[in-house]
Length: 159
Image 1 (cartoon, one colour):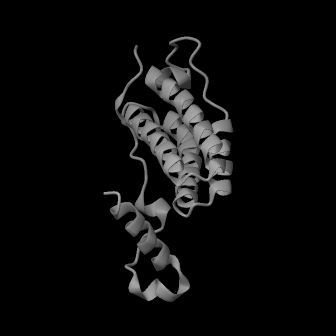
Image 2: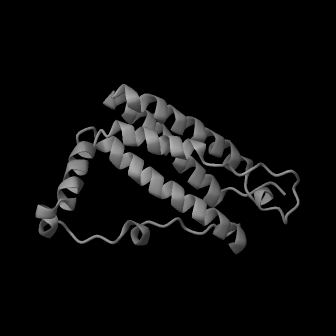
Image 3: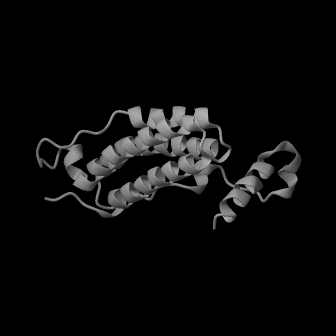
């Protein structure tokens, strides 16, 4: 597995270079290829509000992972700091069903806080120019993202 990821990254980089375009399979644009499914338990209005936020996070994470893969430490740090600094959704004041935040599970808010903390960790580690440390912190940040997506798609707020 440790050899597969760097080889995959190199292959993708080669495919994106001008000279290798004809040697690579055609791919859909990232936005068309990867999209978060809509959770059935959230109303359309709530999904629409969260969709913009998730798209920003998705674009930032994609850029940060590429920066990390290519050892662009400054860019990885800058992007991670942007993720950490993004305003967070506030926990609900009540369980009023008309309040968007009350429709989200508590785990969403805990993971939102963890996301900021882990992004700050990436931003602190990247300037050390230690590829192993950067890889580990990006991995922990990605783990948080995946657990948050699971909460978003499957967990429901307590009534």
